[in-house]
Length: 248
Image 1 (cartoon, rainbow, N blue to C red):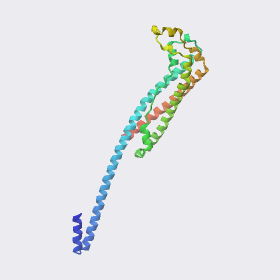
Image 2: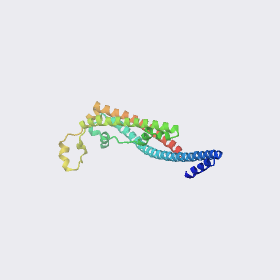
Image 3: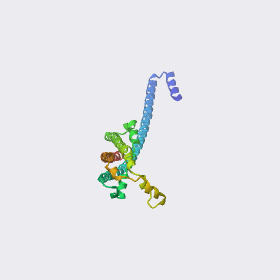
Image 4: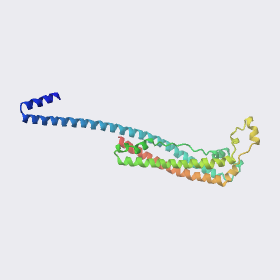
């Protein structure tokens, strides 16, 4: 900068105004070029940062979807098994306790609802921040937005099933089923309680309208959940395919 000032001063002292004007114009052009280059470098740096962030978004989303696909596959299998178990339970209505096999009793008592825990942190992060604007594909954006809605629908249905089990089926079971049945028959320590304790009454349990209604309710809600699981499983596969297309 000192050199440039010295040149300008010399030109003014020598009264070479035309040369001074040309020099000043050249200096302005050099400054404009330098600023443009710096601006371009900054733009390239921003593009690289955005590309890196997009890669991170896609990687996290892909991992999350892959996990959900595995969880949903297991959910499909478990819901199908639960429906079969509930239908078998209804077929036991009218039978005496001594007519029920141990396998039938186990079916009646097996009311556990297994956790699914679908992942949605990456999807929520994309939808609630500026990350969504970094995704160029409008189709992919739409799929991500609707995917979160399907997850929430699935989770809400899962809560309904858990509520039926915890607040309807289990309390009814506790009225008629004794935990004595779970004690080993060949252990002398439990001979007294097995002989004189209150026995399980499967016949009365199965004949109770409250119990029948709770089983039917869970059966219907599980079928709904199975439908949601199928839809979400399909949506997950479509989203993974579209995401892979964008990555490639």
